[in-house]
Length: 123
Image 1 (cartoon, rainbow, N blue to C red):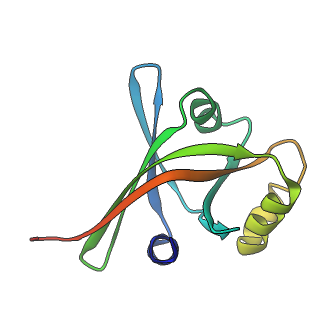
Image 2: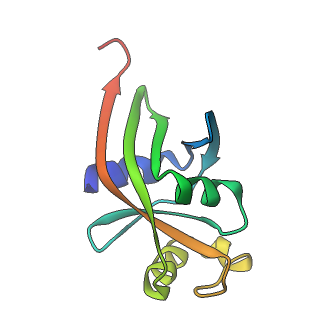
């Protein structure tokens, strides 16, 4: 899990895929945290991505870095604990202008059943 966390952290931006009924949805994300040995992502409760993960927790993440790319599949589950929210926001102080732990909008999702493959182009 550390290798995946470090890879995504170094990328800065990755692309998160969800589904909305039968339509794939893809958007850039920038938050990744390792908390209690689980990968976490962060978003706002009011955003469609949050609603989509609650209906269907299956997600994919894709990112590129220095001639390699990662493809990750997982299931994302809401963690309502203030501690997990605080840990995430401590990693991203710039988000503290928008979100606070326990503010009713800040949400963190932990990833389970994670499968990740890092590939070098040409292999």
